[in-house]
Image 1 (cartoon, rainbow over the protein chains, first blue to last red):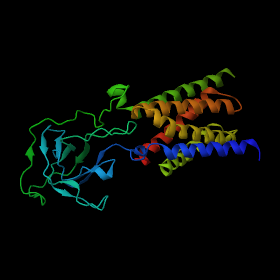
Image 2 (cartoon, helix red, strand yellow; image 1 turned 90 degrees about the vertical axis):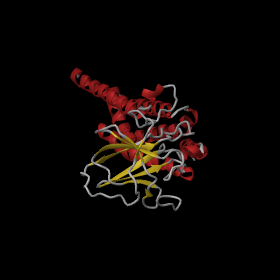
Image 3 (cartoon, chains in turn green, red; image 1 turned 135 degrees about the horizontal axis):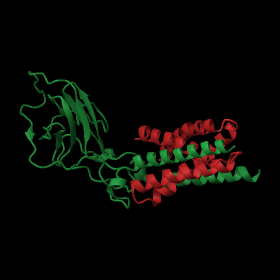
Image 4 (cartoon, chains in turn orange, blue; image 1 turned 180 degrees about the vertical axis):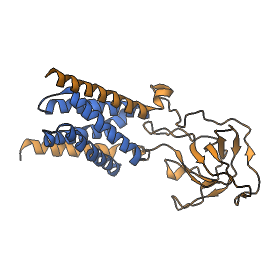
Length: 206
Length: 108
């Protein structure tokens, strides 16, 4: 057997061993803790989507519940612990927040006490909130089925600013560190432009 | 973890190899092979060594992705017949943007 195939096999074996022994936590951290939001008419369903499914913070949340912030009026309300939604994981169903009779507008939904930052240092950041756009006008006779009282205004301030990504501490700082994906695309675009200019210059000089 | 990394690699190869080959019309097979080798190397490196060494997600992503683009471009310069840096940078940047974007969508 010649040397090259042996080297390839050895390299492949080393690669597989490295991958197989890389921190298990990384396997659970393809995405940070986030929210998936669905809008149907004037009903918004917000499903907390944690990275670690075994340590889920779902509806009803015991750490302060979920907030809804209107981007039109800036009003913030505390959602009732109205839980619903289809079965998702661990055989659990009804673990999403169901916000009924929501007027038309743009909203942010997030926990009053945000997710903790991921314990895995290289995991993507968790998100403060998920966003929803309700397009339909609210019917005058809309009556929620999962709650009997009006939603209470939230007395505190929302724990987020304008960024949905939670800033993980890093040497890159919050602004750059919170937008690494954008920076990667930006650098790639810059390299592509330089490369293209280089090609054009080479063609002209022939 | 292994299955997930292999899936990421397959998606990467499936996108980058044809993309790079498109930029080298007169030596597609050669550059496709070069891309497959270089991409596999950088992909494994990023998902093993860098994952252990990086101290944050931003570091992992920025160092890993930008290094991959530059490393792969260097390989294309060396392997291609005309050794054109501009073409190599363009091919690598476009190919990596495609696979990076796909990764963001499919690997959540």
